[in-house]
Length: 153
Image 1: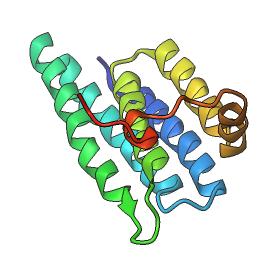
Image 2: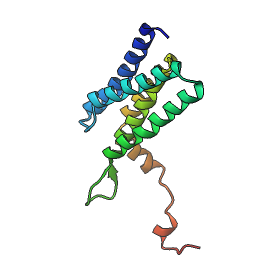
Image 3: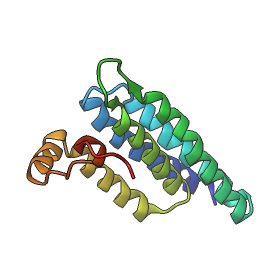
Image 4: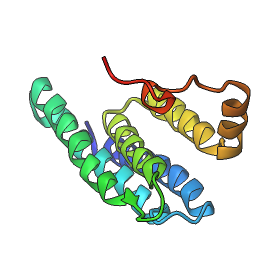
């Protein structure tokens, strides 16, 4: 792989990360444009460098390690507030992980996958909680056994 190709892969990882980060910035989330951009370019660099210089099995282990490791960054974004039962930051943590995958895809030169996955991620992030609430109102879930007062078997 020549240097121009590697630069294009890094740029694609950066653009994918910035696109997702911009959406999170617009919603005033703790991780935004810079964080997502760094994740995208960093994972593109790791995947791009190791995809050509190592045995294919080694490259797949690099990608696996990156995607596992980025989970720790995402875990740091998830918080549980004392007065609320639901944790916060799950969507941002998931978006960080997806951005890492986008960066890996860009770093491996998978242009169509990178473009399509970025568009799909942005489409999902565009959905807000009002849609989820409307779906839950129209399609209520049955009560769980522990909520209905029955004892476990």
